[in-house]
Length: 496
Ligand SMILES: Cc1ncc(COP(=O)(O)O)c(C=O)c1O
Image (cartoon, rainbow, N blue to C red; front, side):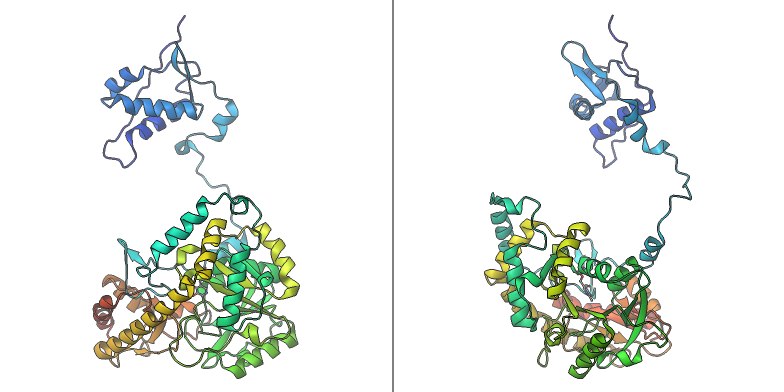
């Protein structure tokens, strides 16, 4: 006796949907099986019949059936057509149709206190609208001038190599040639004292912040954070349940003497000495020495975030804090997000000798490694000289864009806002008159298709300064003057 043929009942197909028709049919049948409307053993209508009934192409039905067969919902036997497979009840329970899942939240299934704290960090604004970078997104390098052809060639070359180390699990703290290239570069360009063993390659600065903090900070430990300071770092400290203590920044950088009293000494001091984020000041040598001395006296680690020091336009670059340290108390970090492009997701830590093994073992637990092939291609990019050539080109391009932005701000908005002209970096703060909220101006700028970030958001205490954080590095020259003009309209709307 032949098995009864399944009656599909209501099948909802929407020809205007972005979901292909075969996928919609697949989903209809899958849900009917999981619901128990189509029982095991039922024969599915022949593809030709169903296609006619639903007024769709036969191939659409065949593709849907093939997918359902591949996933085990249907079975096809020669001579007896396609039938509903006997699906083990466990699978039915686990993969019940989403619309019928119990959506009432179970109060016991909640986020951790740490998880809740992580969500308090504000989201960055989108930097692209329909594929165009908006003026004046901060932290964005120039993407249009990245040597894409060279990068594509190097990636393809590595992807073709049957070298097992690029395809297996064993990279640990990074591709050896990349760690060597980074150590050499940092020694020459940043005065960082290290060998390849001290270099830990991570999936970007954010991963470095998370890894380093969790490795040396216990829940409740005090972490000094620059006030104002980088929100990404604040997020990593919250994720480690640290007690974040905002320490004011003055014109010499983070000021240990201004740290709030009555607190335990910090376990970790986070700072951006080359180019303070977001005020742009460079930490003076006196302050660097004072900070190192304070850290040595209290046994605190210093986490030095050298995120954009490659771009310096005036004065001699000061070498890193790490290079001045003689006590092995500085953990140094940098990123390829600014020198190359953000989505590369490669950063690096340089850790003191006595932490090498701890970091080697910890990164195995956290899994913050970038893909091996990308690391290998980047090593080639550095060793073949493309990295330093690209930095040189970008440095002079960003210098021009910085000048152009400052000139336009002066010409079009002279006196209405006060831009600071930092010696380096990819962005600058422009201060608003007393009593004007940067949130209001940013909202007005958004309406005029200009991106600016409110500097007040980078403060933890109430003593906030209101300014617009304006990126210039990634903004093509021809967009700068019109961008400033639109910013002027936004300011006028806010009475500035
Ligand atoms: C202070 C600071 N550190 C680090 C980074 C880079 O982070 P990532 O490598 O995670 O993109 C940025 C980028 O905005 C930054 O401003």
